[in-house]
Length: 383
Image (cartoon, rainbow, N blue to C red):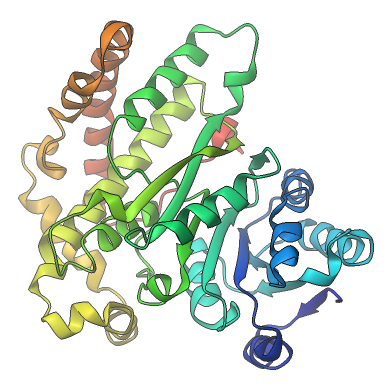
């Protein structure tokens, strides 16, 4: 098999010709914008995964697709070199194909939509979404996620365990410990979806479309759409499973400034998800919800500002500011209550600090949205 760098116009032809016969079971999509410092290491851990050999033992194939969204640095060159090397040297090179696409338009949501709906092989039954700035831990992570999803017909998404890079430090600073404690609080919630790495059934993914102004909260939107079966039933957390024998490492926010910005981003994202899931989508007809991808895609095309108007109306009604997100005042204490033993005691200080942080960042998010802005995406350590 050979790697290929193709233009956007060639995507559909490539995905439906050679691979129509070979029928890959799995498509792995890597979405990136200007990640030349991290993409090499991320790809190294990807190609060390046992999933290629395991699929080969079954006589099944896999595709690896890089989708760059408006990259202006050396990311694409590094990917091209790595793909060429792996398709010539990898022990299981006969069981996978690499493709590379460089979209002109920036934006992860656009890249996600293009990859899911027109770039990934139509024959694939399972799709992995992977960020370009993570490291996959252990050789069996992807295989364990895939087989867990295969074994559970109720589940639509399999996730792994996200690990902050600071968790590997022998000597942790106070800010490191605060950041790690905040992670324990997050993991206390049910049906957690980390957008950095997950495996989703292709049929489910292709019923989802991410509105172009959904910035900063695609994971929350996907989570609730999937758990409610496209708002046709009550939420079922079992539709998203977390695989304990699978994990990845990512760069943590540790400075006060970066944590503050990330929390502000999360507040904006939660507000967007609330407006869509709790207020707008329930007004759609059952047919519109069942065909949600088509419904939202058509809405974006016909009325590009529709989501911004919904957010503006919600912000006007959100007074005082903490009403921007329902349940904001008490959710951290509810998660603390679910913890047991010593962990509940050790997490109390971070719960109180987190509450103060939530109030502050909600105030900041409210002011940001009030100005008519939506897109906000800070990076760890000021990248």
